[in-house]
Image (cartoon, rainbow, N blue to C red; front, side):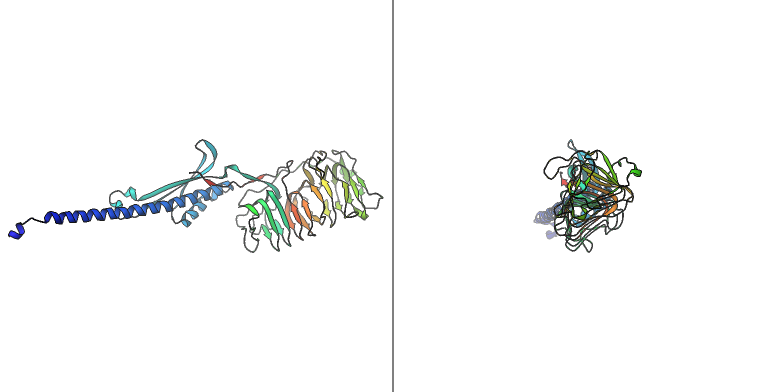
Length: 425
């Protein structure tokens, strides 16, 4: 009985038990806090990735795809949850397009959850600006809505370092490059969402294209109004026979409409002269090699219109000088205004006759070629270099030919949003 009545040492036991419980609590608190900090870091990375991915889709005009991309990137960054997305039109007084992504997730804990379940929930956010409206002007627009719009092979090249290419095809083979063909451009946009810039239908661009965007809006620039002419008076075929010193075409007035049934430039080894003016060709327009490879003199301040049924062929070795009204001539002066400034040739919408450009290593061509319903083929000769802004149905480049595409200040083919998204919060 004396043993049971003795209370010496009981406080020590109770103190030991209490300190053990407190120590375990601090240990659990430390473990839980460390776990929450770790989950918060993962969640922040996931939120950042979700905001950037959604902002990229917004900048590319694919707002309907923002959530799917954000979901995928969140999972890839180790946080399997659906982020909440909010689109903002201004932030801190700065107007632009923003995407705010919020990631929340309940985290199991050992100690904190017993006292306050809210402490076991991680919620973080991130905001990205969708590029701030940066864009790339379009200098090659291919309007075929299905199938293969662009085919480049046998070392064919598109060189468009300051502008971009837009392909309207919705097919997975919308653009095909092989046998050394490549594109160097500021941007490349494809309407198709199933096309990829790798695989059997596309040789990797190796950094030659700065921005590649799929699922873009189709390009469809406005076509000019055709010139007025009397088709009954377009009966003469010119340039097809030998004339000493070469033929001279047009009256010399840049705004005068000159209408011919057929026009052959540089035939029979002579060099013809093309005066400034507007030319309507109802049959065929052909450029031959000419004397010493030079097909024509003049050619500054010209506009060619090819109505339904008409065709254009530029044969191998047909070195040309053709400059649209208002554009720079080879010597640096400005070509006379035709009333169709910036446009060199317009093949009427609905006219699907193929346009063929071959050879001509020393040609100087400055202007836009509009043939929205026609295939354009550029080929033959490793030295071939053609400078054009292009609207066509399809485009094929082969045989070492190079198409130099530049933005034409007189022609608006639209633009492609390429803004780089950036995290701002």
